[in-house]
Length: 171
Image 1 (cartoon, rainbow, N blue to C red):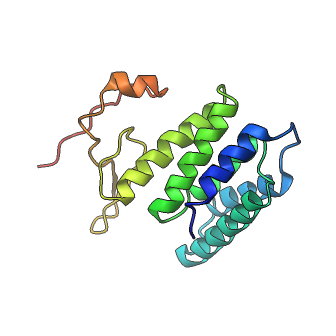
Image 2: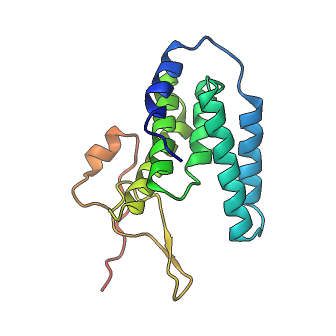
C-alpha cells in the first residue's frame, strides 16, 4: 500500500473537518481487530483479516470518513497491527493527529509510542520507549530488545513516557 500522498490529505481533513459523530464502521473494525487477538486464530488467517481491515481504513481515509479524534485513534490501532514500516509510519501519523486534535487522549499518546517503536524495530533500529517485546524463535520466550541509549528519560517524559525500567544486559 502506498501512503506518500495520503499524509497531506490527513492533515487537511484533520484541520478542516466539522464536528461529526464517531465512525461506527471504523469502531466495528477495531472491535473485530481486538476480538481476533483474544482467540487462537492462525497467524495466516489473522494476517489476511488485518490486511482487509487496513484496506478498509485506507478507503475510509480517502473518502474523508475518518474525522474525529477517536476515528484517527481507531485507524492508528488498525495500522499499528501492520507488518511494514509504511504501515507503522501511517499508524504513527494517525495517532499523532488524534493526540493533536484532542491532547487528553491518553490512548492516542500510547499509540504514538507503540507505533514509533514498531517503526524503528521494523527498520532494524532500536526502540525508544521499550513498548515492544520480541519472541525468541529458539526458546519461544519473549524479551524486550535494547532501547536506543541516546534517547534520555527526560526526552521520553516530554512525550508522556515514564522512565524506562532497566533491562538485563545480554551476554
